[in-house]
Length: 98
Image (cartoon, rainbow, N blue to C red):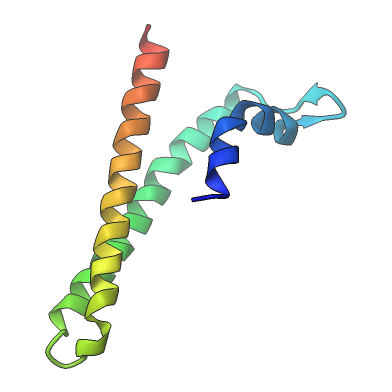
């Protein structure tokens, strides 16, 4: 969390820094479109794997009781990821629909 705070605060400056080469912008609409199209399947697959692992570990809690806290951590991570996704989706929908 400590490393994310400066990243969130200075996101625009970091974004321009990584997308420019010698002061020249190297990103175009195609890059943005590809990023948008790739982000949702990537997010969905990661969330699916996390939820599947959490369910599998939780189901085996009687056989492997020492791994039960890991299932709670996976559930918590999935919930946080979904909340962040929904908040950012609402934010960008409002930002670009105006």
